[in-house]
Length: 127
Image (cartoon, rainbow, N blue to C red):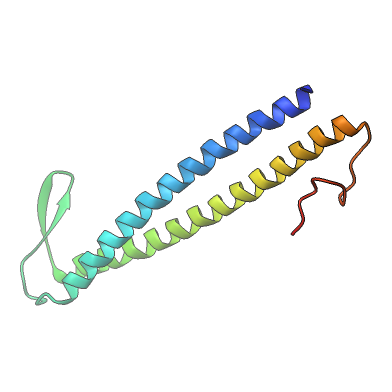
């Protein structure tokens, strides 16, 4: 196997690991987003004069309704942005993976055929 092909295989493995990490981070962010949305929905049904506490580390600190609501709303907004960023990152990594895989296939098929493979050649992967 040519050294260039071996390099591409290693690059594919790295991209696969990156994709797995991005997927795990997205899943964690989605889970946190769902929890925050549920808490926000629950908070909307609470009397604004009710006693509120927020968790800071392992300590509960008294807060007011407006602060609690605003904090949750900001958390939901930032988590939505984070999930979107991670989805885009996953898409970019997937595209890079597909492109690299196509290059590797062309390289391996081209090596067996003895000539350069054009963009429309065998293994070019149609859309």
